[in-house]
Picture 1 (cartoon, helix red, strand yellow):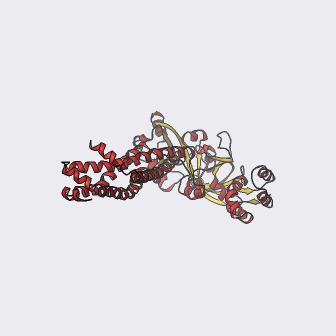
Picture 2 (cartoon, rainbow, N blue to C red; picture 1 turned 90 degrees about the vertical axis):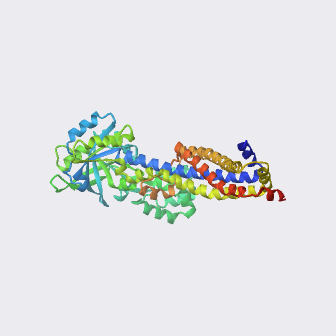
Picture 3 (cartoon, rainbow, N blue to C red; picture 1 turned 120 degrees about the vertical axis):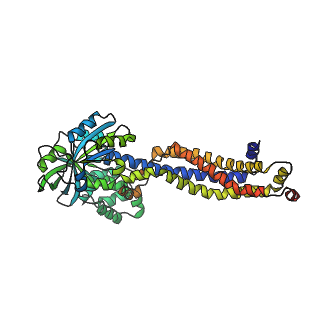
Length: 474
């Protein structure tokens, strides 16, 4: 009977109750969306770290891991390969040569890691081959020699990324919805090559006003971008004897991931061609990247591989990408912080509403006490009113939040204006929010806890009422 009375009581003042329910609903929607964005970013970072950068497990020679010496190759390679081929938990693996080098073009130079790879096997453990930019060439082919795959960032540094307004592009702009006055302004810089986005953006800022630049700047820059595919790059590195050697490769493709730091430091060539350059009959294996069927088994695989030899060191993705691992491990703490702050703010409104309800029903509560309703039932009634009031808003908020996150999870939220900053720390400018079932369980627990906590003060206020005195009040 107490739950029924409590439910009816919250609707005695519909306006006040609806205001509280609406506040709770909006608060929960905000919390679900905020956590959904955070969860989406974390899952994206983990996926990209594993599938583009470090894989599930990596093996290196312990000495190579310390000083990256060219001769510090993986110990007991045949034994390790035997273990990998016989382990049912291993999905795919590949061998890599990894050397520090200097890449040079006639216009610039930069330091980077040159990875010698088997392109076919690499596709089984890495998604780099899916990250080729539009009009950015192709992924290396094991049957084609003399080619190198570099990143969009490396191409920018080496000035292999240029911007040029051509006659066909002008015609394309005329056929599109680009205003004629903008096309005329762009025609004045036709045929001029700009070797960096900074230079091209600077000239656009002179030619276009801020409104035109805001509306059409990105479209113009994307359309004018031209990669100098098949341009030669000179690679300088140390051979097996420590002597500097040089080789020339042509750019076969340009890739771009969500991590600018990784992109700037990584280029890929055929493993056998790289061996010829540093003077070895067979490729030197400095790194083995391993993908598993189930990421939960990384510790088991690590323990198996660690027993093969003590001269190698085995790392999981959590050790190789600690930023992603930390964000993943701390998600429940983020749940508590975000939802905790929202529920703390809502608690003051709930307490205020319930105190007003108690003051309005002083005579009624005194009468209930006078006819024999004990203090325990009075306390339970007020607590249930608070829980019902809060839960109604929470359920509506979780349903609306789930629908909103589901829609945005398909379309994504685009932070293009801050893309460069996000990618500098390894996060995509396009995030696809997602919420888990565990999060909704957590929200329910927090709502009940907040409701119970918020009901204590109003309930104690009611329990202190004197039945005789309350019955005399008007």
